[in-house]
Image (cartoon, rainbow, N blue to C red; front, side, top):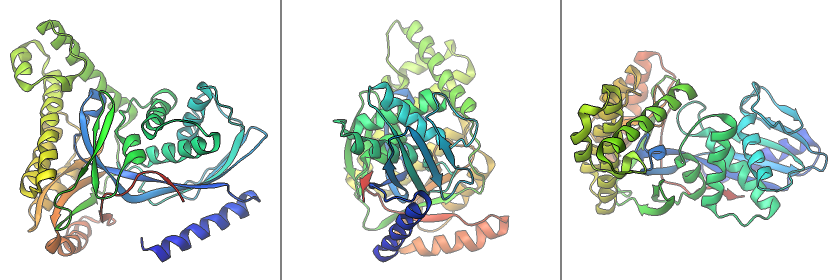
Length: 392
């Protein structure tokens, strides 16, 4: 989005807030969505992941109230909310749970949240696997952090948002989505060690002559919280068995090498073996990918994307025909180094590394050949690595 258009959008949203709530907003916060370059389904296994913040983002205009009333509106959602803070998740409007989850976590910490008016606007495609829900949490948390003058670091706010989703929404997600929306840095990927947790920025060494293409599969993400939580439970069971058989108390699946798994694979039920093999091999791919970024090795990075998708498809079983077809088509195009599903899976988006000189041609062919022949509404865009949350 160019600066002029961005400023017009901000002015429009401010007017909308004033018209809807009959007062001026005290704060405007932007929080980006994310795409994970590599390291899928290992954040909740204590692994190192490698996401970037993307150019798609949520804007939140908000003002505090003194009557403990919450008036919450979204320009993308049909249902709004007006009422007191709910201590438990709402059936509808469901999107409000991402807001209330965050509020409840601040309340648990002893902060008094006396209500607020809020208008949310987003250009992050919903249910696409680009973490619109985490962006809502982060924008809300950063608003409250600023309003309440807390001393929380960005990582501490990300952890609060993760607790909100775990405890209130009921999705046992890892830390990655909230952390990158909080801590992202322009032109850098985020090396996030979820076991500590800690992070550092990794410059994208080939950013001048390649681009990241984010392309939707045409199937909006269907991974339910039950399926997600099932994968997490399977990993926990595999870890327990491995610890019992080796006599070593590993903290998480990402802590030990593939050779250890090979020594105990006969003791694992087949499904648990597959889950563990994906997690451990994916962690190794992340380490190699970080070196590829630092060295500017785009060929190696693309190869790792392809290997990651294969593992997610065969061992973790979170791909689907739509994602497989799209990644196969993208890999067949001149100038594409590699492609894989990104996010939780079962629909949503792919991430591909594309040579700059071929980028526009690949995107044009994707729209005119791939999407149109399948009757899919085109949804693909290039994105640089962007900054995390900020006050506008």
